[in-house]
Length: 217
Ligand code: E4P
Image (cartoon, rainbow, N blue to C red; front, side, top):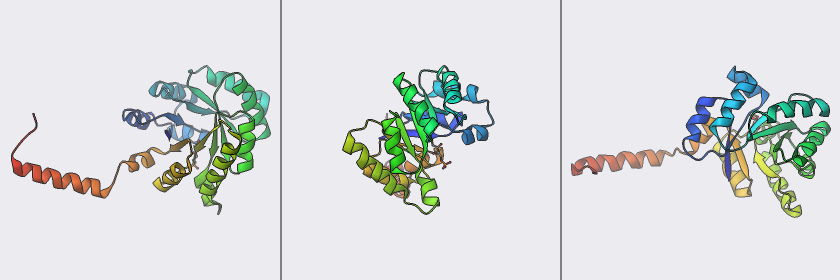
């Protein structure tokens, strides 16, 4: 399973990339606004921090302008993945870009039928938003389960990129279902390393080791 980080904060991205466990980055207009940085500049910097796909989102709503924006964004670096919304124009843009070999992440997916359309449009990634789904009284994990079943039924190669992840249980359930990727806020990725019994175990071992009076090397 691939781990992407969902942020435009380059310090967090650099820190997580240094673990060797980061496979890519997703951003969106809200995350760019939160960073307070210039979109093109920060996207270029992020692309230099990982070899994996870096999702950069178009903001136009019509196909022609989306294509123009994608043209500008894909020149930033080879690992830019163009993010388009799940609309008719977004999927037209997806089809056109993937036919030319450009990676596309179709975002704002809230139904399995939408995910089926994205796969038919040749999407590289489909981004179902589990957290926002849960917030609105739907079952985010059921959505992932349904998409996995449909994609497997027809051997679609579109990767299921679980988005709007809010906590480690979202990741655990996604991994059990067999989602291909999860994009998580930095805090959620960092929390995965932690367990109170790991901390307690280290404390106990170090206390006992000190009693031996030995050192390694
Ligand atoms: C993914 O690509 C989206 O940017 C992101 O996961 C949205 O998450 P949110 O619902 O926490 O804003």
